[in-house]
Length: 122
Figure 1 (cartoon, rainbow, N blue to C red):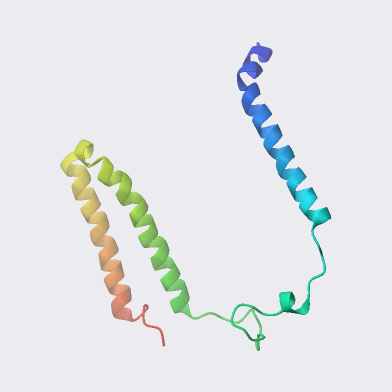
Figure 2: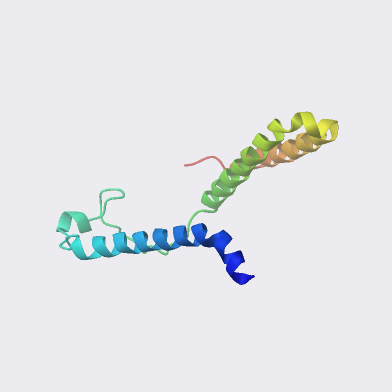
């Protein structure tokens, strides 16, 4: 019984073994054959062009987090809108009203953050 069960999954198991083997081989080849002599230019600061002058664990402005949360919220909104738009004909009026309530709540939150100045950078 177990042998018949495993026969059905043999191609998947074989694919996983080959994929893991190739991935490990590529990582090992890269590790052993790549040059490991970084020059000073490679080790220099590249983000803004100058060396950091303060601790990297400094506090961030709260507005940074608000904008990040806004991005996540509106990204999720788009993720919900695509399936909703495709299935709108099947879900009917109740689905339409539910999505309009969802969009209204998101719009109220966006207007609140806009009025509070969370999107203004100095």
